[in-house]
Length: 330
Image 1 (cartoon, helix red, strand yellow):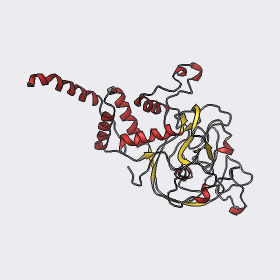
Image 2 (spheres, helix red, strand yellow):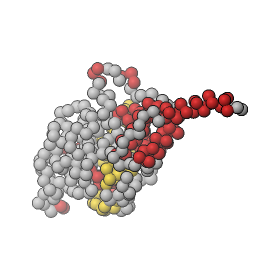
Image 3 (cartoon, helix red, strand yellow):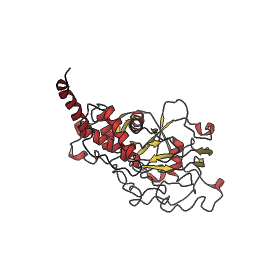
Image 4 (cartoon, one colour):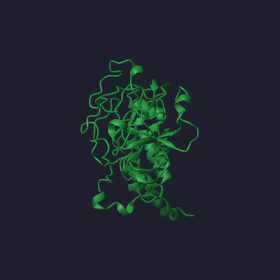
């Protein structure tokens, strides 16, 4: 074949390459330019048939998601219901054990499966500063060739707040939450996954302190650091101050799926080092609390919610945030 005959083919490849690099690479606060470029190449390799605009959006989402990761230095803590005053003001919690002997305190939750205090030792890891946004979750589904869920309702005026792109992503299944995190990991070449239940609680309690509520001050100041009890709709992420380690919305807006299967007696059998939950089960665990629950009861750092991993629809009260299972800072 002559060189002239090859020119059109070469020209097509050149155009494809230009489309792949249609926008400048996004700036990253944590990643080197070389790492961002490597992510861009993986996005282009995985999705050669997507438009340049969609590939740019995926790249931006992956880089922003990594930038939003908070490094959580590992350590040891007592996991489980550590007790509270039998009568207390959620708006003014004070410092545990509130001038009492710990054994004289009452349970924080009415549940029995979180009562068994046990030592847990965690390696360092990263946890997302925010829950996954609806807009990013939609992009993930689009990259897989899936239709947007509830597409027929997206333009309804009375449901506008439900589909705010900055809302926590509503899930229908635990698996799609995990798949999203693994998708980020595949494109970024980092070990991204859902957090373990122990990782979630340790971070919510500001590296394992005896903090009842995962807010900026350990108390519930409705309208300032958490939704008001009477509010009945999910809000966009990041509306209230973060907890002391820099995590937003650890309670009060939407719950977080974690990796673990649920077992009522797991706390009694849990290994000390990096527990990951039972090997099998029928229900998965969500942590935190959502906008529809009574906050002073359900918003604590130790409350566990066991749920079927598949629900009937995409529920705004069931979201997630991803973790990087690596002990080295980005």
